[in-house]
Image 1 (cartoon, rainbow, N blue to C red):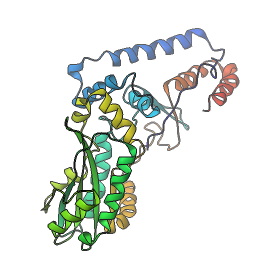
Image 2 (image 1 turned 90 degrees about the vertical axis):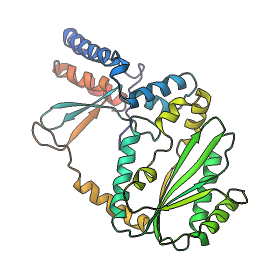
Image 3 (image 1 turned 30 degrees about the vertical axis):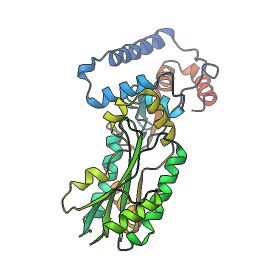
Image 4 (image 1 turned 90 degrees about the horizontal axis):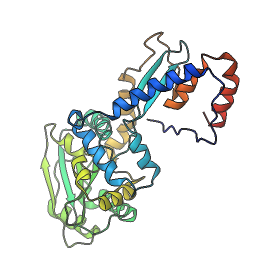
Length: 324
């Protein structure tokens, strides 16, 4: 999980008495590197970069959520990892891990896909079910909570009595005809009574019946559907600014992926096994495992403090005041 690191405010921070030449050189080098990153030509950026830039531009001046500012930092700020053993420093791009960030969605979807794949190896009768409902005008947190409750009620209904387990992911779209919610289910079941499924789901969403569809999936093509993002990056970038802002506020803190039955019970063990197989990144210089993570400002001060032993005490007090 990526930790959010907030830089200290100017009122909290005072520079220690360090050699001016050392500080100026470090700051100048960092500033040049940052300017070079920001001046990259758009044609050199991949689609995720373009989508993120479009979303950021549309939300500027509209969205004031802390989550939005973390999104703006994603890929544009550096996180510095310093080995506590040998002092070796490595740089990484800051990642916000927000569910609608075009930069981070692939990573979240990949982690989800790995869990589903491990579980699906034990499933002999996978079915891909899609549930839809009518479009509506305004997307709100209350509307999403209502949809989540309806999904839970549907899982407990008689229409789902033969399903032993699976998962569901919710997708949000807006194609100029209002907001549309639909869900993709991966179910371990031999047979589903689709007329009953349609009536049951329709009653839950206030319709006489609902459009639903199911298909038997024995290959891996279903993984892309059930591992989907909450909204496609291309769709997000194409929405009007007001709709985009409405979406960001509505989905904050909401879950869009759920497991149930056999997958719910097997999930923790599968995740532990996946973490155990994942190679941990040790220090390339000495092989140690303990690190200090900092933002660019804090890392610059730490580096500058090395040139002035007498300023270390004051520097430590500065970090304490800034919450480091």
